[in-house]
Amino acid sequence: MAKEPDAKRWGWGTRALAGILTLVLYVLSAGPMTFVVVKLNGGRTTVGWPLRILVLPYAPVYRSLDHAPAPIVRAWEAYDTFFYRLAMR
Image (cartoon, rainbow, N blue to C red; front, top):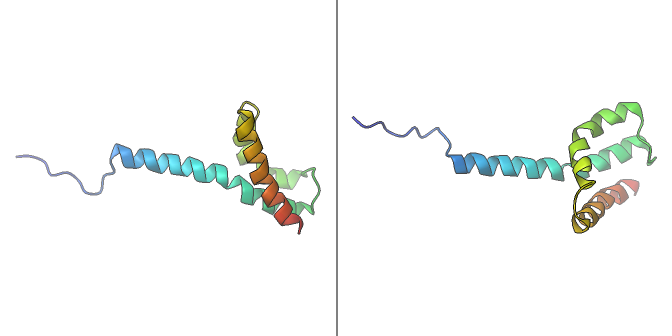
């Protein structure tokens, strides 16, 4: 007797795609978090202690930018600056 495939199980391709999309959304959520931190911080560039908790999960993103190629760093700066300027309005 052959086993029927379980319809509730995800294939490895679906899991890989879900993982990649999760990482992309994590990285892109740093922009809106920049907006929130700038709004809560009153536009100051130095982030105080309570707001550092909000920024802490994004440390790996900013650490990886230290070793990223220049075009990626420039694109990220443009992305981050967009949310900073949006918050300063």
